[in-house]
Image (cartoon, rainbow, N blue to C red; front, side):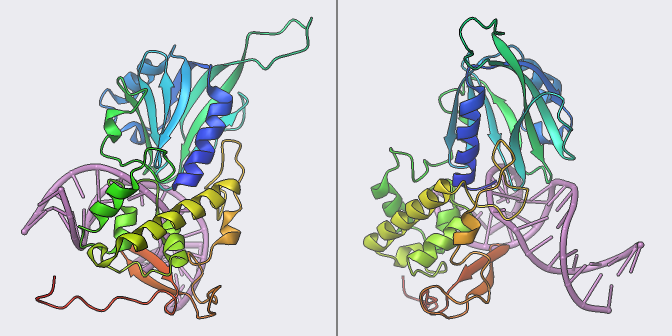
Length: 301
DNA sequence: ATAAGCACCTGACCGC
DNA sequence: TGCGGTCAGGTGCTTA
């Protein structure tokens, strides 16, 4: 479940259920999702067994489990990845790639009841297309070295609005491309880029260096608003591929104003939403509210 | 450093 | 029923 709100739903679910748990066994069922771990599937598994999970963190669309030894299990869901939690013995998913057997702290029980100290739990990485992946990051508990090139995301309290505006205004690329540039601002993907641009009445083809600071700041506000609203509804999900750790879908798809709405009337002006090809994918926008830019003329900067 | 295109995968769907 | 093309929420690598 690719974009920031969906990954945050997963992070929060993992935080609630696996912090304090220990990894007892790791079973890699397909090598591709651990391709970025140079030790291979066996080394990947060996580096995790016996480790206790101390925290679950996130930056943009990456999440990681901080381990007691200072390492991290870093993950990205790609286009179709899921992290699911199960009671042991649940039927294997068709695209189950990695199974983690955990010993989780038992919930508090009534006094006087002889309770076990831990209960078994399975954490599963399921990924149909395998664009996602997992890697053990040495010393990565605070911030994995593998993702230092990823910018802070817009709901990070330390995100620097001034720096974002300054950098965006120096770029000649289309503003939608800038929103999707994870080195500039992370966590924004195709859905929320189109939604934020629609809210800002801004055409995604407008070059960054032709936008004013106030316009970019307003756009940033819309990015935060739409992501916050999506998060409150459990994220955006069109099908069973995008679910939380319990396999449940979010509902924000019902609130989309632009993405996937080709031919539907714009919620502001009634003009039919258009779809155009952009960066080998699709962009949805209102041709009336979001006027395309004039072509940049030769000789003008 | 920035910019743009393609590669990496599987599966659903559509027209023929 | 099968075939080929298109599409899908993403990132990274390569080439200028």
